[in-house]
Length: 222
Image 1 (spheres, rainbow, N blue to C red):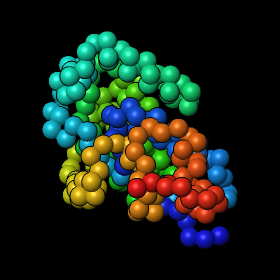
Image 2: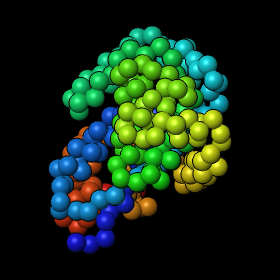
Image 3: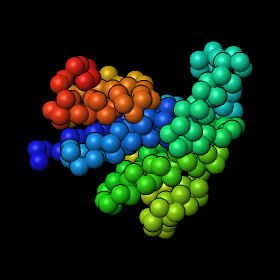
C-alpha cells in the first residue's frame, strides 16, 4: 500500500456544520475502507476567539454576527437538524455559544496521548454542546467529557488550570489562517486539496478515491 493519505480536519467545537462535515467525512472513509490508508488529524479553529467567559445568547450572537432574522435562524436550525439526523447526529436546542479555546487545548493533549483519544474527545465535545447543550468552556464540564472517553480527569483539570498547550494551539490556528482558512469545516488532504463545508458523503468519498488514484481525477479540491 502507498503512503497514507493525510487528512487535516480544521474545525471548531461550536461549529454545527463541523459536526455535519465530520460525520460525512467519516462515513466516506468507511466506504473507502481498506482500499486506502488514511490518517485523520484534528486542527483548531475558533469561530469566536474574543468570546467572553460567560458566553453569549446564541440568537443574539447570530443576529449580531450575520444579520440573521428569527425566521432565517429557525430555517437554518431545521436544515441542520435534518442533515444531522440523516448522518446519525442529533442537534437539540441550545441557548448559548461559548469560548472554545480550552476545548482545543484538551484536544491537543488528547492527540499527544495517542490511540483514538483525539477523535473520541472531538465527538464527545460536539455531542456535549450540540446534543446535550452543555457549556464547553466550563473546566469541570471539559474534565468530565475527557474522563468519559477514557482520559485522565485529574490531568485534564491540571491542563485547564494552567496555560499548557496554549502556545501550541495558537501556533496551529495562525498556521491555518496563514494558509487562507477563514471558514470551517475545512478539510485539507495531503496539504494540497481543500474541501470546505459540510459536504455530502459522496463528495468526500469521490475526492478520496481520486486523490488515491482509484478513480480518474476531476478537480478533487483546490
